[in-house]
Image (cartoon, rainbow, N blue to C red; front, side):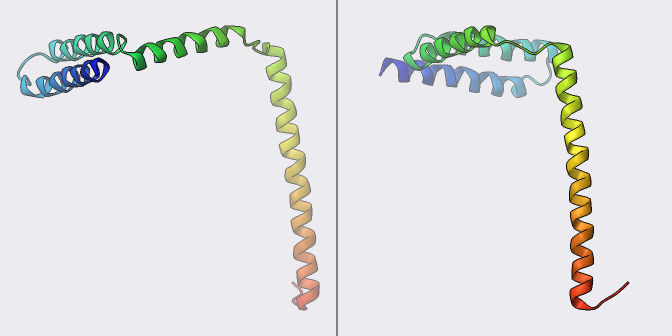
Length: 115
């Protein structure tokens, strides 16, 4: 129940900040944006004190750990892979073009419509 109240408070803070952004339209844009960002920071701080917020934080930390474990390809490997993909696309395009020409010829032969 306490988590639901905290999440509700966070949502109300964000909603109040958005309403305030438009209500105080005569104020400088910088001040209004700063107010929304501060309210969002407070709402995030409140949300992180809930069970779902803590779980989300742990999930994000685990994702960052996994990203650090990824072995990214070198520039040379990326270039070679890109060239291979481009060559294969070209070759498959030629094959499909020839197949299309053959099918067009076969249909013209079967229907008796010579061109």
